[in-house]
Amino acid sequence: MVTEISKQTTLVSLNPATKEQIGKTPCTPLAEIPEIISRSRQAAESWRKLSVAERLEYIKAFRDLLSEGKDAVSKLITEEAGKPFTEAMVSEVFGILETCQWLESRAEHILRSKPVPLNAVFFTGKRAYNLYQPLGVIAVVSPWNYPFSIPGASILLALVAGNGVVLKPSPKTPLVAAALVGLFEKAGFPPGLVGLVQGDRDECEKLITSGVDRIVFTGSVNGGKAIMAIAAPRLIPLTLELGGKHPAIVLPDVDAKVAASGIVWNAFTNAGQACASIDRLYLVKPHASGLLDEIVSRTKALRIGNPMDANTDIGPLIDAPQLSRIEEMLKDAVSKGAKILCGGKARPDLGGFYFEPTIITDLSDNMRVLQEEIFGPLLPVVEVGSEEEAMQKANSCELGLASSIWTANIEHGEKLAERVQAGIVWLNDGLFSHVCPDAPWGGIKNSGFGKAHSEYELLDMVMIKNVAVSGQGIRDWHFPYSDAARDYIKAGINLLHKRTIGGKMQSLMDILSLKPKLKK
Image (cartoon, rainbow, N blue to C red; front, side, top):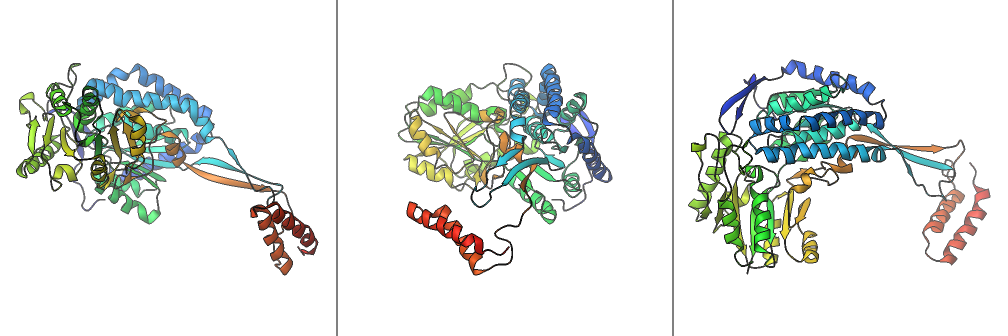
């Protein structure tokens, strides 16, 4: 992942709404990172000996602290990441509180030892069961766009499973990460169990190469490939969530006002800086009367400004490079014939990295807005002649995280959902399941692999050990082999898998006659 030594020693946090400095965070010295992992591993040695119920008592304390301090946490997220305060509360804090509650109700059942059924004929007198044991130390490498909820959920699941954790957050949101780790400390978790590494790419590489047992990474496709390359020599298992290009397919039968409300929110929440934001909109002709006008009208009505103001809908982009990226993508589209229906301009007069929510049409497939993840308040709208054309275009992308279908015919929508090449499909909505801890979250193709949330991520945090128990005895399949042993095994297979009663009866007779001939 690192091709040169970073010269950066301090991370400077800017409020993207004002460009004012709100804090400085020293990068973690590379030499200290192995020690941070070691402390987490040492703390995990006693932590793993606790029962799941005992670990959940710490989760309850964390949940209570977060519930009490939700305003302060949301304010910090808004100041450092720029999202409106309401969004910080709902999409970040609420989701973590829900995850705590879900773990309190489900974790013991999921992680409890479970019996494994064995074939009663061949394996008489045996039993087996699965144990779910901690892996060790989990590295959580998290992004800036949801700097609290994305790492927070994975850390909680890793801890309940009995692991230590080291968090390496985005260098753009170090203050939120420090506050998150601080909450675990205040909740009484063992010192060092949840470690923190601040920095950028070289610190991330040092973390991965210093002995972690699993990596949970959320970020870009290129970042995921780099992480895989670093992890490959030690075969460190990974979960990769690498962004998406959410296609929304809108069928002609929708209610224009209802669909427009959902589409606009899903396109522009967090100023479009969500991996599962609607990134391309396919309107099937003849689309609902007034639908596009309604989408444009609602977009024009969005209020841009100070994200701490309760009346603000759209906050700033995270920083200047992100703002420049959106400007360049729009310029590319317009130069190739795209038409701007609303928005289209940066708003430096507002004091931060603001860009107007923008809708464009008259698009061609060679435009960057249809080829790359946008990650900003820019919505490309494509009118297509049929739902089959929409499906073909939706599935043509190499990213496959999330998608949505908008229709009044739920049954038909569910049939279409089966054909969409994405890990998540929403009908008449989107994004909301990111705060639903029961719902698996993850993609296919270049969007990565593995799941966040749900029992699937929890089981990724453990080693599933199968224990098989037998009394002492010489087995029919032991050496020496013989003609009788071969025929005996064959008869046993026939008994289990012949479909006719006659065939099974003959197999049973063969077994009874051959058994005395076995010399074991």
